[in-house]
Length: 247
Image: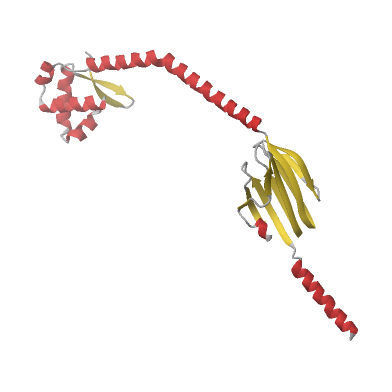
């Protein structure tokens, strides 16, 4: 009878221990913002690690940030903590081996893994504000150099832009018909001239489609305009294009 009672007591104790001390799993990454907010990604059945973001594990004393994590026993865990850019670690302690490295964004990364043990980690760090200011000064310097180069480029090329505008104006003036020449044209020829003025250049097929007239009528009027020295035909690849003749 005594042995049966002892056996029942032992089984109850085991079940009670199992319920009181559940074992957890974790595979998470914790990224710490400069304002202390911790963003958690990954998977874990530990309630405090199931939050997308939290201030639970971090506090600030004067200018020193303190991360303090103390959990129950985990069957297995892996965690990675990424500190804000330009952080400097003053103190760090852990019950197991940790790895400290830097990533390409000037951030310190602390990682560790373990079996059948809790996570007990404490980190004290500060953020180097002078380094951040130095980075901003470099950015401002680069922007200033770009603005100076851009201003110099515009200054050097301003006369050329002006000369180009004068040249285009002269060409536009040269291409204008006198009133007497324009009045001598028939309505169809005036329509052809307006199309060429608008487009700058046009083919005979294009003019025919725009006016919806027979091809022979287009050819006859173009020949008449050419004979008067108003337009000229230029070779452009496999196509003949029509332009106003410069005066």
